[in-house]
Image (cartoon, rainbow, N blue to C red; front, side, top):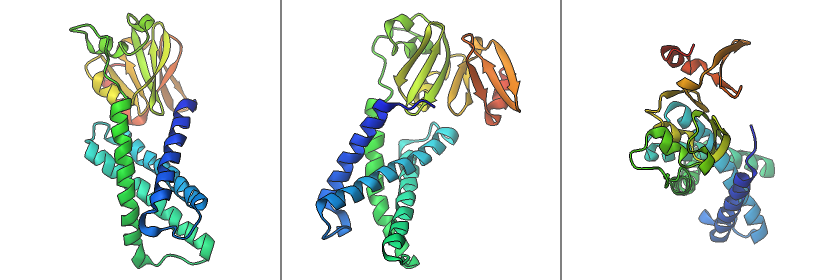
Length: 249
């Protein structure tokens, strides 16, 4: 998968700002007496770890409950983040002192970590709603779902045929008859918008137009749908029954 460096750099900037803020307020006096530089390293590291642990929870939601309510999404991702950070704190305590944290203290520690995780993941989801999947501004009145979706792309793509959509982190790669383009959007939002566009999800990271399928390829027990461009969209076992019902396999 291609690394989206602009997104990664923005993430590191957010991690850094959040970690510095936590280092400044020093919640729960967890690093009392430590120099600010050490507190900053401590909190920035925990924020980064928590963020990537939250991504695991978000990936599960995108796969099994892509249309989940934001409250459930925040609950699942914050718990995932809190579990990752709590495990890291246990390992850190063992590495620095040679002692393990007593089991009776773990629920309180997890609760304290979870409070911060809820705040951080809540801010992240609010940012997603305001930054990701911006509403199209150039779609003509009465436009269909494909035309509305393509209105987010540069002008040359507006009259293209939509072949497929594949996800790369928070970005989507839009496959059309006139080439490909990346946009900042989540696949779950695209699936909702393209619900009546004559296509279906065939993989946790792929949506494909039924009219765009030119061939079916099988290799090593795996199934792929071939697009007009020659690109191959994988069909996961989970989505094969729906693909068969749609007449694609």
